[in-house]
Image (cartoon, rainbow over the protein chains, first blue to last red):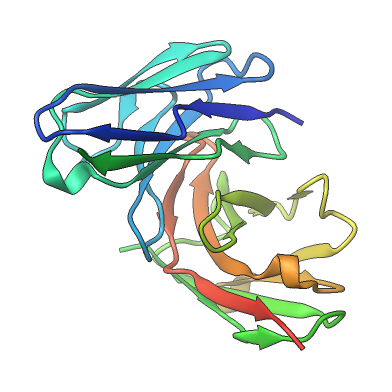
Length: 107
Length: 120
């Protein structure tokens, strides 16, 4: 099975900050990497798919990069509504797997 | 408009079998490339993928849970059913169903989730 490791587990930042979250796969997954945002009590929402493609309707301050085993999610200028938990997920092969999550909190 | 909704018992006893139903609209599991997965999330913890069923009835399971899981579909009712046997308190979680299309390979539509508590 493919293991996904995110860092950091938690992050404190201020509105307007640039933030980067990283995700590492235990083996190559090409570009089959998705990023989700989850707010308390809600289902996750896809932000980025195929490592760098922005899901329709998602603000352009979100971007993704990487391929192979190392990936990043960047938020260029944090907005109040961005404080949430973020997960990466590999869709290279089943069984699919998620990272352990990064909780983004207000500083 | 694609919607998915999970339903099932809120409380099950240890050793019982859980049956969850995902009822969807705006998508068809007759369409090539369409898939529905189940994903769960224990309180305060990370997401865990459980199972997937495809338009052609191919099925895939979590390695650690595959002996306890069965996924099936009723295309005429627009439903996907997940059964999990021998429930344990560690299986307490919110269970989500979600759509994936093999072309985009991401979970683009989710249900709101249903909380299942395992307790005697």
